[in-house]
Length: 457
Image (cartoon, rainbow, N blue to C red; front, side):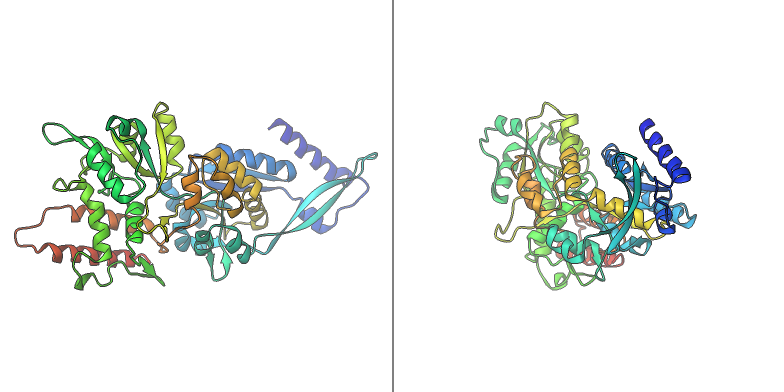
C-alpha cells in the first residue's frame, strides 16, 4: 500500500512539474492519465484472490484504483437496484449467468476495444518519459464462440453483443466417501445409474424405528439440498426433456395426455423415489439436515455438488477419504450436465466503462484465468486450458463436463423458478387424497409449475 502511494505521488509530481521529462502532454494524454476509482462487487469468497490481481493491474496502471466489495447473494439485487438509482452503483459486477437476462438493460455491452495509457521511459540516462495510449482489442463474438466452452457463447451473447466474460466455470459432479463404501463391502465406485441405484440400497442404513441413520445419497427433496434445482434439471435433460425453447418453457408439453412414461414424469419419479419410504432407493427425506452438512459429518455416502464445494468440504472434513466422479449418463454418446458460473460485467451507468472493461479484459485473460482457477479450484472456461486440468484427478470430472454443460434457464427471475421446482418436488411427495387420481394430480402439478416458470421468462 505504501509503495503504491509513493508511485502515485511520483506520477502526480511528474505530471504537474516536468511533463514526464521533456515531453509535454496533449489533451488526450492528460485525460488518459486522470485518476480513476473503480468499484467492483463480487459475491463469493474470492475477494482476496481478486485483490491480488487488482494489485498487479494497478502496478501497470497506477492511475487506476480498484475497490472490491463482497455482497451477499440474497442482497445483491436490492443493493444493485438502489445503488444505480442513487447513481452510486458499482462499475464492475460479478453476475451469475442466470441473472443476465434480468440485468441486461443495466449492463454495458462490451466494446470492440479500449484505450489505455502507459508510461514508458524513452531515455534511460535522463529518465525522460512518454505517455503512450494503446488501443487494446477485446474478445469478439467469434472469439468467445471459438475460445470458450459451448455454454458461454449461448449465455453471454445477446443480439450479437457480449455482456460479460467468465473467470471460471462449474458443473455438477458426484462426491463420495470411500470409507463408507469400504465398510459396506463395495470395492468399486459406480459407473452407471443402474450401478449407483444398487449401491444406494446397500449403503442406506436405518435404526429400529425406521429412521435413516446413514444415507446412500442426498437426493429426492427440494429444500434441504442446495443444488436440487440443478440436479432435477440434470435428470430431466438426461431423460430427453426439452426444458425450454425460444423463451417458452416446454417440460410440461404433452404431460396432460401422457402416462408416467413421459420423460418429465420419468425424471421426476426417479428423483423423488429417493425420498419415498416405499421405494427400494429410499435414502433421504425432508426432515433431514442440509445435504452438504450431512455429507461433511459422514452421514451421506454420495453427494451431488460443484467444484466450488471441494475446498469447503476439505476445510470442514480434512480427514475424509473423499473422491469425485463425473455425473453418470443415461446416454454416454450424448452426455448432459448443467452449467453454474459467473461472469464479470460492466454497469451501464459506470462513468468509467473504458477502464472497467480493461480490468475485465485483464482478469479474464488466459494467464489470470489459470491463476484464479488454480487458486479457487474451479474448471477453466477456456478450451485451451481444459486438457491440463484433466490431469488432476479431482478436477478432471468438472473440467471434462465443462465442455458440454449447459444452462437451460434464460429467464428474468431464477430464484422464483427455483422455488417453483422445489415446491413441485414437495407437492409430489405428499400423500394422495382418498378421492384423488394420482396421475391427474401430478399432471396438474407439473403443468402449473411450468406455467409459473413461464411467467419468469
